[in-house]
Structure formats: C-alpha cells, structure tokens
Image (cartoon, rainbow, N blue to C red; front, top):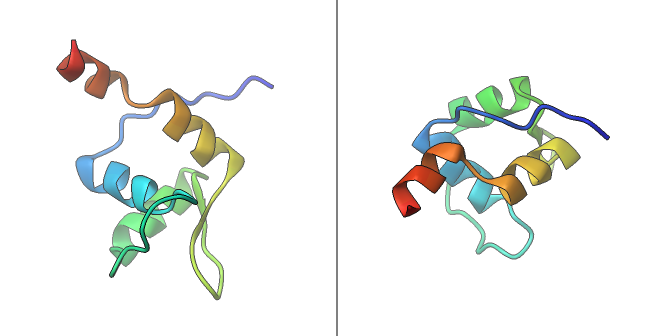
Length: 73
C-alpha cells in the first residue's frame, strides 16, 4: 500500500483529526468547514451519525506532521 500521506495541514485540521481518533474524548463541536476540507483530502468520511477517520486519515495521524517533528526537535 503506497499512499501519499505527507499532508500540509493547518492546526485546525490537525485538531479535528485528533478529535476523531477512537480513543479521543468526544469533541464538543467540530468545525464543519474544517471537516469538509478533510473530507476533500479523503482523510475523513462524513456520515449521518458522525464524521469518521478513513484509513488514509489514520495513516496521516500515525505518521504525524513533519512540521510538528521540527517543533519537537
């Protein structure tokens, strides 16, 4: 499986992805505009009940942001 998971996401987009993790606390209110952006990137699936991470979204979360790596170094 070779997917391009190098994403240049905004802080709001990263926050929304983190809020959608299975072990995360339920987010009070996710920004619909940000969710639409993540859906366009195929990182999130929007359904009737709640938005869910796609397999690509999970891969992005596992790999993290190279920008965040620079901050941690």
